[in-house]
Length: 222
Image (tube, rainbow, N blue to C red; front, side, top):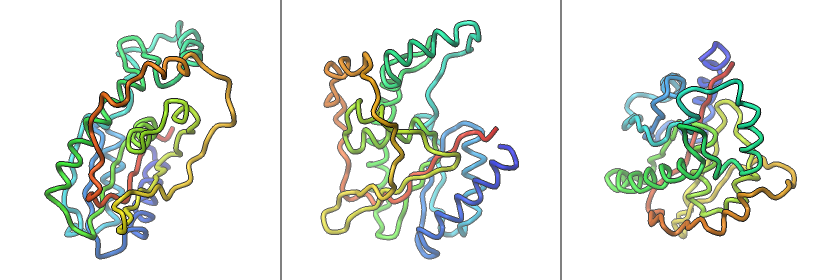
């Protein structure tokens, strides 16, 4: 992280501390990327150590794999192809598509549900330190949004975060953060591909007893 990125991480921690309060506990899940782990460390400085139940690194919440090496000569072609296919279905050479990351998201949510069964406390919060694309795909999977809706979501700012708050009346999670969206766009090939994408092949159901409040993200600040 640059000095600006470090300051953004500390500020994010302070903002989350205000939202969570001084007496509630947190569990952190962090991407294995260096910038994510640095962000998590700086962010957690806002919390007292006794209120941090655990910090766990999970490779499933890493950023999308763009391929082993990026060929500058073919970059323009790649951008045009991805624009035509759509961010969800386009797979980078030796890398991943958004749909591949979606599979990781589903697996992570399954594990998260099981993990939280061991930490069922009314004042416990989850903070996920990940990346912009993962955040959008997490929301898509969590709320079972369509591929078309996913394509309307703008990326988050550096150290931006969104909040999912549990409704104690019905156990559902309410998205408290207003998301930025792109203006109306032209249809892409992925709009027709969506018809063949079987979302129900992922059987991970959201456990309504999970007390999840904060889902944070970070990306490198240049």
